[in-house]
Amino acid sequence: MKLKNLGIYNLAIMALLFSFTARADDMDDVQALIEKYVNSQTLENMSTQAELMASDRTYIVSGTRYSNNEKSMEIQTADNAVRTKANPGIKRISAAEDIHIRLNGDTAIVSFYLIMNDINNVSNVEAGHASMTTTYATCSMALFKIDGDWKIVHTHFSPTK
Image (cartoon, rainbow, N blue to C red; front, top):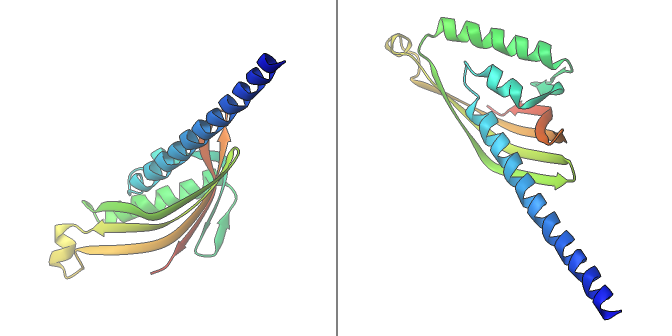
């Protein structure tokens, strides 16, 4: 009888240890996905962002809700193409600050501040434009673990300046 109880206790301890390890791994995976998303916030890298999203992601920006992820990515890509053509040589450097991640099973809720710095090209600076413009935004995302991979299923991007 005592040997049987010992086996049950060992199983319970192993289950607890496994769940803490899985949770830590998931936290690290979500953190890495957010960092990849932020680092892909360039004018050229929309395809990298798309790899991080579920095909049915919902996107909210500046009060507009896009429920068709393919269309919203097409709009963002077109906007970036015009911006890049109008300002050749512009470079974007982005950072996420104060990232908060809350896990619940195969769901993660994330919020952070996104800072996007656009470094202007020489001709624009010579014409009197600022050498750098900075956009600040508060972001929140919902992520689901789909087929073993974390994917962004909802993004709310709220520019603050």
